[in-house]
Image 1: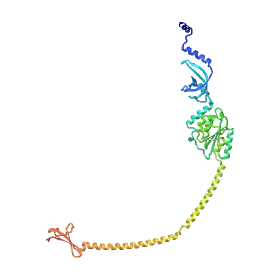
Image 2 (image 1 turned 90 degrees about the vertical axis):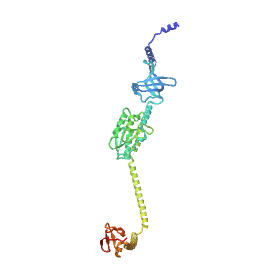
Image 3 (image 1 turned 135 degrees about the vertical axis):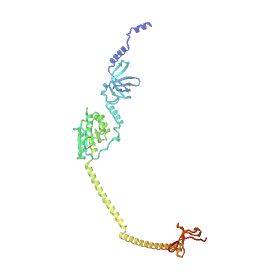
Image 4 (image 1 turned 60 degrees about the vertical axis):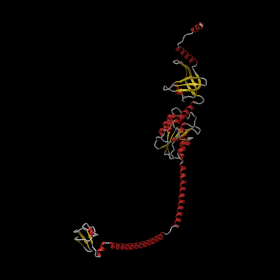
Length: 404
């Protein structure tokens, strides 16, 4: 036992710091450059800008860090669950003794970085509603001016101009030339969209280029181009590549055309065709009006056959009115005679009941001084003054005696 202890004591005694430093040097010497395939988990992106995550497979995992300076070449956003291939070096973080993979290059496994970046951007912009059909605007039917954003010397511009002149020669075309691929082209296209849609009279804008590889068309997948299309004051028609090509600009545009020629045909009507249609419709209208006038004349003629002579109708109405007047006059005269007879009978009855009739027969009416009629001797007192009314005149008398 003592021999074992002595053997151990023959080894140098290291501090923790010395041990971690030696391990770091050994690891960096043996694993100065490695490629590691695995799945990202526990991904973090704190405010420092560095990426911290784990790379794992079915049996093991290793901590990894990608400093902000190494992220400039990344075209996609790392995240949990993503299969990647990482390049870097193995080292030891001495302060905690943590074994780490220091990543300087990160590539998605099984899909290209550009394609992954495109899918991530597409998903994020879709969540914002930039591709929603509800925000798409209808194209004007007869625009006063058309804006075009494309390369000045490209075949796309010539195709657009040729089609516009053939279909609607009088339309005004405002061309804003830009580069359609390469570094800085996206910024030019975004600025050009803002410029051309602000020109007075421009009611629709065509933006695009001819076909090409995904790398050639990549500028139309840039976020700033998509946002410039959405922010344009007038409807935008995208004409990027051929029918099989689809960019984020196509998804954001108010309308997508398969080719520049098709885009020009979308934004203006065919003036000659419109004139032909107007002529046909005018001819149809004249024919319809003529037929309607004929129908109305026939209807009027039918009505005229059933219409009576108004002079005869007036004569009949006049005769009828005269008869009614005679009947009314006779009825009024009869009513007047009946009323006079009834009035005479009532007068006779009234005369018979009148006290004046009694006076005519020699009688008199005695009244007190208050005007009340005296009907019996018992209603007066001796020496009372009364008024006696005769047929003609009246007299005052004093009661000197009475017989009950």
